[in-house]
Amino acid sequence: MKIGFGFDVHQLVEGRDFWLGGVKIPAIKGILGHSDADVLLHAISDAMLGALALGDIGMHFPDTNAENKGIDSKLILAKCISLIKEKGYKIGNIDSTVVCESPKIMPHATAMREQIAEVCEITLEDISIKATTNETLGFIGRKEGIVAHAVVLLVKI
Image 1 (cartoon, rainbow, N blue to C red):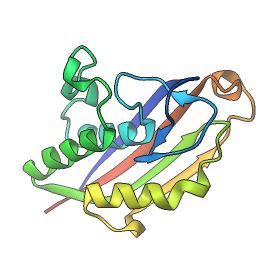
Image 2 (image 1 turned 90 degrees about the vertical axis):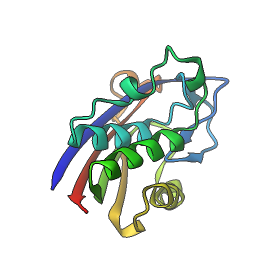
Image 3 (image 1 turned 180 degrees about the vertical axis):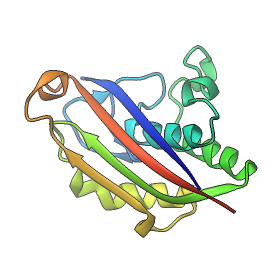
């Protein structure tokens, strides 16, 4: 077994979509990034890569590459799944936490889990998504940004 930890942070800005866990969520502010800026999928992807010492998504999908502009983060996640399969592993389970003040995340958790399960070829029971606020403290509390943390257990096939 191998365990990996992932973390991602992005700014919240007006005029962008709010993609999280592969789901477009209605929000006043969207997430800024070179890709669709899905912090949850980025954290999960980084956790998988980290578990096998394969670098991070910035190495595999650099923001200096024009082909990655606006890329759907489900494609990033799928590439990471392909990489771990090549190394002889599959996902055992995923545990994640999203930190933001708004919008409310948990009403969308099942839809996000469904998207992640489909791409990762695992069951809903193998995916945990939790959400919390930052109690109005710091850049998250001021609604300037969003953070996601993820831990992924990989098991040998």
